[in-house]
Image 1: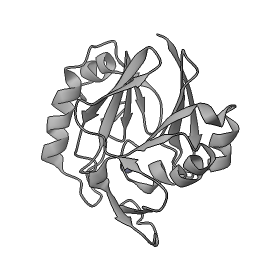
Image 2 (image 1 turned 90 degrees about the horizontal axis):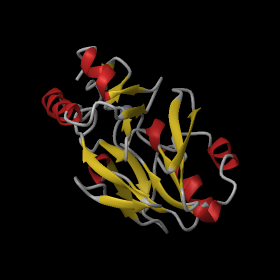
Image 3 (image 1 turned 180 degrees about the vertical axis):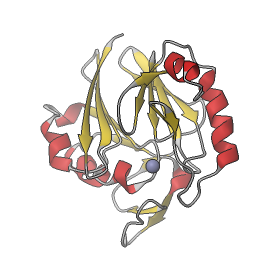
Image 4 (image 1 turned 30 degrees about the vertical axis):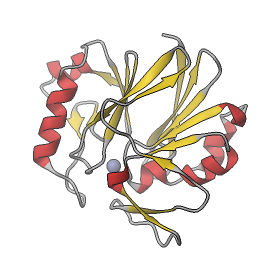
Length: 204
Ligand SMILES: [Zn+2]
């Protein structure tokens, strides 16, 4: 392992935001859901923020995205396009439905299946896992899986919000069950787990 993961919670829904630092000093921010100051205070050199990722478009995962991007000008912003509606004039953000983000001054990059995103001597691999939302993805960095709201400790993500789909989630679950058992899972809420533990518990 040649990177460091700093987890902490943000917002009322206690979303896990992750700051990942590569061996060359590059930084990735995953799921900046809320509390921009809390996130930015944890980043010493904002010029080193190379990526901002959203695992899906729910407001509790993207709420601080624009503020973080504003303060980290070099960061490339990745988010699943299927979850986001774009508008030149951002309106009220949907609560746990599609989120409207502004197109002004920000270029968003979609997270496509199998895409490899270089990060220090490692790389993030995009695994599309629709179900919780149409665009949900997991990000695999070596043995670490950032699972968003697709897989949690002892449960899968809910499909009860708009765009949720049980059949899709079942397919995504099968995909995740094929990952190496020692893959550590860093979910969007609550505690860490592993692929092995969730297979043993019958979740995967
Ligand atoms: Zn969600």
